Amino acid sequence: MKFEISREGALKQLDVFINSELANYSFKRNFDLGPKDKSNVSCLSPYISHRLITEYEVAKTVLAKFPYQKVEKYIQEIFWRVYWKGWLELRPQVWTDFIEDLKGLKEDDNYKKAINGETQIECFNDWVKELKENNYLHNHTRMWFASIWIFTLNLPWQKGAEFFLKHLYDGDAASNTLSWRWVAGLQTKGKHYVAQSWNISKFTNNKYKNIKLNDNASPLTDNREYKLNALNFKKEDKSNKNLIVFENELNLENKYLKKYENIYLVLLSNEARKLKLEQKILDYKSKIINDQKKRFEDLQIIDEVKFKTLTHEIKSFDVFHPSIGENFAYLNTIRKKQDLELNFVLNEEDRFSWQFSNKGYFNFKNNIPKILAKFI
Image (cartoon, rainbow, N blue to C red):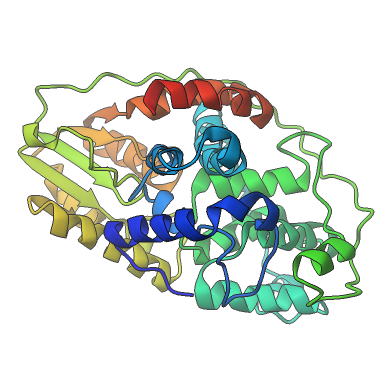
């Protein structure tokens, strides 16, 4: 499958899905029809994860055509990303610990067989190939994959989460890391997801049968506890004339960009990243940024080298908050080194929604109508 790398392409894809498949989403969404057919899901995550289009924009477009009751499941699935981002914002140490954990994990022969699709499990091997070729996997398949990785292949969940982030177009620090933790039984302590052969068979239309899996595995344990942090974002500083935007927060549609004299779009190279990405993923991010530059001509695209040079002259920036993850960690590092004053600007939708990420998704889900009522 191919993704048209533009905001226009994303909106077209959303329109096609709404008019052709959305009405049947609840019944068909769990089926993985193979790498060539993803028609039963919207495949918008590569755009949403970079905020080329937003979760709120998708919801608004969908609700313009369908009543909430008919598309409730789809809206809930879209808002998982909002929930995960808010959850990690409230507990940023989870990301820090994940990156630190990776430093102490070895890549043994079992790991190498797994990432090369050379295990004894046919479906898993096929999914490795699909991930590397298409840089996308169906969400249900991601759950099966993670479960097999953790409970049957006995590999560290952190290395699996890293493997996904390296190869996924929609790789997102919050959604990816926390989903792997959920499968492992760490996100909701004691509640894990164990892949079953019958389930894989059913939802791949019997493509895979009699898969030998460890389906009696116990959840993983971790004694680390994460307390809630306060969400503390300043209001936009009307006096600042310099704006920083990272590739995972490209929502420029409803921002008051005219007040900024200089707008810099930053894409970090692998040299500046703790977790190295495949070149195809960096190329995808570069194309998305360039699509925005075509639409807003005054933007300047820079890497970390040019950004550091820039900070010798300019010491104060507004920053569209890039969420907890690689970009935010980089900013914190360079802020200290270069003695920068950074004012993180957060959109009102996230500011309101993230307050409901303090507990589990059930609590957040119950507040989705309140979010929709306020913004849509």
